[in-house]
Image: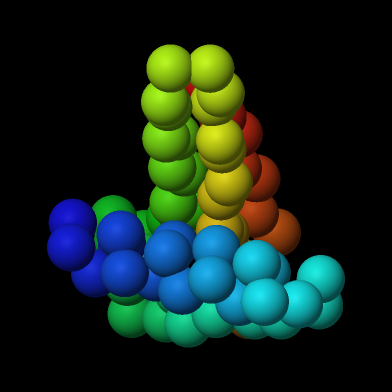
Length: 69
């Protein structure tokens, strides 16, 4: 879980610094249970705002589908 948070925050910081900035990728070894894809979604709230972002990875040569609840 901490690795997922670190990965998602690296993308947040990368995009905060530059519109085309990037962060740490999700490794294919982190896609479990025979799934074709994985996603990390983060939601942060303060009194007035909600901030959301997500990072996804699809295995090479596979079709993946991610969705948010």
